[in-house]
Structures are given as C-alpha cells and as structure tokens.
Amino acid sequence: MTCNKYKYGWLLYHKKDIDKNRWFIDNFIEKFKIHNVTLELVPADDFDNIINNRIPDFAIVRAINPYYNRKLEKSGVRVYNSSLLSEISNNKANAVSFVNNLSIPHIPTCVLRRDEKTGELYIHRKILNSPEFSFLEYYDSLIKNFGKKSDYEKYIIKSVSGHGGREVFILNEFDSDNIIPMEAACEKYYSDKYVIQPYIDCGNKDLRVYIIGGKIIGAVVRHGISGFKANYSLGGEVSLYELRQDQKNTVMKIANELKADYCGIDFLLFGNDDTLIFNEIEDVVGARMLSECSDIDYISLYVNHILDI
Ligand SMILES: Nc1ncnc2c1ncn2[C@@H]1O[C@H](COP(=O)(O)OP(=O)(O)O)[C@@H](O)[C@H]1O
Ligand SMILES: [Mg+2]
Figure 1 (tube, rainbow, N blue to C red):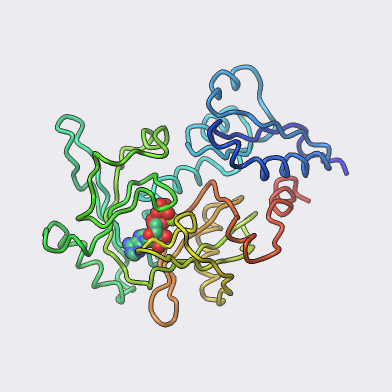
Figure 2: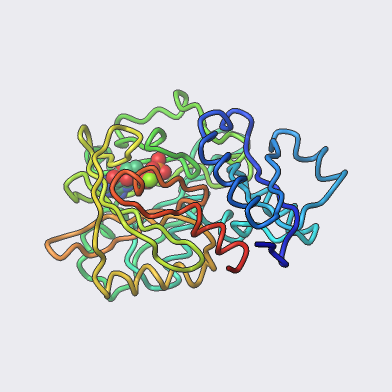
C-alpha cells in the first residue's frame, strides 16, 4: 500500500531516550514501511546541524522541547505535534491558562518566575477558575491567600516542565536548589519556572485521556500507591475508565482547540460524580498504561492518522 501524502519523515528523539523507547521506535518505523514511507530516527541532539542539510516531508517530535517543533514548522515541515500544542503542554502554566480560556474547571494555579538579578522567585500571575465553578471557590480563596506559612502543607509546587511526578512537591518540602530539571533545555525555553496549586484531595487518583487525530481512543485511572502523586512511573496502579458523555465533551473541547495529533490530557477526578478538573497535557505521551489494560493498537491508529488512511 503506497502513501501519496508523504515519502520521508523524521522521528526525533533525544539520544538518551532512544534505548528505552526502542520497541516503540522499531514498530513505528516498520508500520510506515508497509506504506512505502521512510521514517528515519534522527537524534535531536544534532538537530541544528541536520536541519541545515536536509528537510523531511513530515516530522514526529518525541524530544520534549518546543524549539524543535517551531523550527521545523518555520521550514515548512508538518510537525506531529504542532508547535502550538508543544508550547502549551510542555509548560504547566501555559496549559492551565489555555484551559481557563475555554471555561473548563482546572486546578487554580499561581505562576512563579525568577528575578534575574536577585535569583528570588516571585508570583508572576494567578490563573483562577471562572466564577460559575463555585465548587472550586474554596481552592480559589486558598490561593488568593497564598503566602501564609502556616498553610504550606495545603499547597503543591511543581516545575512548569517536569514529568513523571519527579518535580512535584508539597510546598513545605520544597527546595529549589535540590531540583535537577529533567528537561533542562525545555525549561530554558520558558520564563515561567514553577506553579503553586492548592492540594485537591481526590484520593490519590487521576485520569489520563488519550487522544489520537482529535479523537478519544481511551482513558485510564491511575491510583498512587504511596503519597499523593498518581504517576504510573512512581509505581501507581492503572485501570480502564469509561467516560460519561459530559466528560467526553469537556475533553473534546480541549482536544479540538489544540488540534491534537497524539497527546494525553490529564484531570483530577473530583467529588462523588468524578467531576473533571484539568491538570495538564502530555505532548510526548507514551501509552504503556493503555497497553497494560487494553488491546488498543495506538501505533497503527497514529500511523493511520498521520497518513490519512
Ligand atoms: N494540585 C494537586 N492536588 C492534588 N494532587 C495533585 C495536584 N497536582 C498534582 N497532583 C498529583 O500529582 C501527580 C503529578 O503531578 P503532575 O502535575 O501531573 O506532574 P507531572 O507532570 O510530573 O506528572 C498528579 O498525577 C496528581 O496525582
Ligand atoms: Mg502528570
């Protein structure tokens, strides 16, 4: 089966991530080959040299840094995901701000930047929910009063570009000098450094919804087994979740606006009716959790989306 849309594409990864993603990379390349499309694995570490020599028809960026997505788009390359999605989702402050504009409930968020001269962190802006979500007022008022040391165990602080729960702390356990940024290059891309949020008690579980080609392909609930973080990579448990229509509508509002190719959208599940409270968007998303509890062939779905099959 020959594809008329593309002949040659790039699969961009940081060298450090290639070995642990080998299975996904090999499968992905094989699936494109079936359609006579060559997908070349390109190390993002050599990006600037390589892009000056040749240009692909399309690029799948699996190296977290919106710089690559933007530079490729400027060269006329169709990029999966777009630089818009990459810029919004790889900065937790941008993601919350984006969802706030869609009037979807999100975790109230206070954005910190660092003063270049003194090195001190300062509050740059607060992103609070729109008034109709009155059930979140308590949290809004917590964050409005943020600053009282006695309340520090009620807040969470996270670096804007962290992953896997490794840069997420209860505020009174936080020490910025001890955080080694996982995505240092990406962090440099943004002026925002940290977000502070009220701790919202949702029983240590959260929801990941997978989107491919603007459609929901599945959702899983993650349940943290130690501490408040539900991340699978920290040893969380996972099970398939059936979304109600109203929950699907919320997710689709975000996915449509982002023109999402392949991403994960994460929510806290709040209260007895599992109200979705937006947390973050994962641009370079893996699907280990989905594979764990379903037979969904996300690689084929993604290839079909890219090739318009
Ligand atoms: N404001 C919050 N209130 C309660 N739990 C939270 C809050 N923020 C994050 N968490 C929990 O911590 C986990 C990790 O935080 P998250 O913002 O998703 O960072 P990461 O990008 O590192 O996964 C989330 O999956 C969720 O279970
Ligand atoms: Mg997360």
